Length: 348
Ligand SMILES: C[S@@+](CC[C@H](N)C(=O)[O-])C[C@H]1O[C@@H](n2cnc3c(N)ncnc32)[C@H](O)[C@@H]1O
Image (cartoon, rainbow, N blue to C red; front, side, top):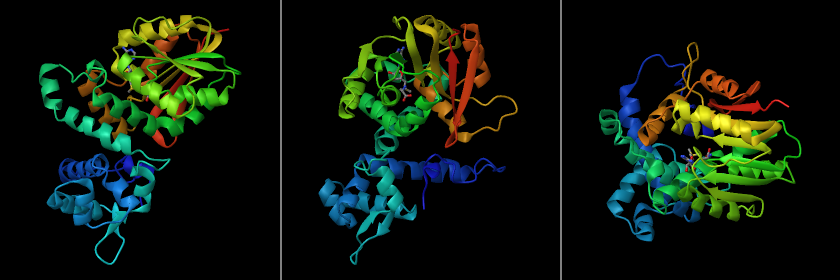
């Protein structure tokens, strides 16, 4: 019934649509989003996967208001997330919901669509204020230990972990031994590179609050002996020397153009000849491109979070050339066409 594409808004014919549909976007979309977020954050999907239940039974098990649970279950059933599962009105998650939104599922994105998205919700509620004042919500200034960090870094781990083996496969280095993943957060790319390169020891450089969560994730995944963490600011920390690979996924859209150019120059200096800089990003549409709503809409989040924006592949490729990388290869993710990965090799 659902596919991952539906969750990213690609199941509906949005790309080809010509008429705006304000009711669908602003009202139905808002209500559906909130129902799914609360279904995750209140553990409705997890509890119903463990045991199908009625609204009254579930309210008692989760210690929630029965009237609210009844209303939320109606909403989720209307969207096809829950199905009848008994003679007495019990409900259970639909198969795709069990796969994607039940935390114990190996393919779960419940932390991303639940806890992290709940922070997106409150951040976007402040969009008008940010646009009036130019003062962003400032996620990266939130104090270490705030629940936002666990939601953010675990959510991103969940939503990206299945892409990184493919990403690692297109980096043209053999038997890599050293790499630094700048703003690597949860370490998913570093771990994928370790799976591919048996002698690799990777370092994730990130802010202290992110490192605290990333270290826990890497330990849970069994890579603590191969992926180390270093606390530091990507804008001025030493990246290293003679590295095989430097990577940065989803940092560029939080930085200014000047900061990105300097980061790429420092990455080039930290690489050995033939070493690679890998940049993973949301692709800002350039003239002539079809605008993908997911790329364009997530720009609103980045703006509200950091007062920053996404960049076109031409902009990013230009900075890489300016930083001294002669060859830059562009890779696309077929399942997520708004994503690009640029691989730049330091001349030998
Ligand atoms: C959108 S997350 C990306 C995490 C991971 N690379 C990914 O793609 O899922 C942005 C990351 O950048 C980190 N970050 C933001 N500003 C930074 C800075 N000045 N120095 C180091 N890390 C920074 C955040 O802590 C966070 O881990």
